Length: 366
Image: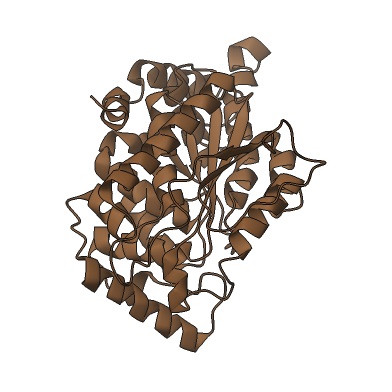
């Protein structure tokens, strides 16, 4: 059995016995029932994933998958493809939004190059070792960007599987370092186009309904982008019953890596926080491969991309935040970590009525 199949086979339902224990404890905490709203349900979900009625999120990580897209040749982005390696270099130097937000969240950061087309420049002052390594960079490129999916498949099926399994391996490495909560993000100019094509292919909705402005294209460019997504679907004929085939025909290396990250984390009972539209499209693929994955997913936020609302509805996920975020990079996931910490801590650390010597609600109230 290959790594992908083994990983899928390892994903189990949440621990219902622990969930019952967590629900019992929740009902005894020193507060009116339901007064902490969704935090209570989130805490119980975390308990069921982590298999403890007192969940603790001590070790947190955010993993950013990076890759380029040949479809940028069709003029679908406001930014050139050269921005992808430049932004990866910015991540490594600590100058991006996700660096600040991960630091705020108390999360370590890992960047994975699965298919950046340009050169990632690592300044000598940041490199470690003879091969210009960087302590937070993993370089496992499947190729130098995908092919132009408006003209043919973005990648071969074998490449898609290799990228997914690379993501599983990265998840396993992060788990070996110690991991209680994983946030996922991405970097890749052109990837909202790929995410739109994946979403249209897997939901059957028209391209115009799931394609947005991405990096901020104008009205004319948006119409061109929609036409390109339609062309990607027409040329490749992705079959919604074949999620790996969809991924290979219209996806991206970094999106495939995200699919593996999600599956690898769930197989090890680690909760996963999705960022925006790109990570959501990866979750659509992963859930199509393994529906048992869904209870392990938490949606950080709702982005303005129209396809993201579609993705969240299809996955049955209610996002924690709605702040108009459309950056990517895992920024929304990092912001959600504080809420998840609060959810876990209230269940683990609050006193029960009996422990605190506080009278509970009267059974009979006139």
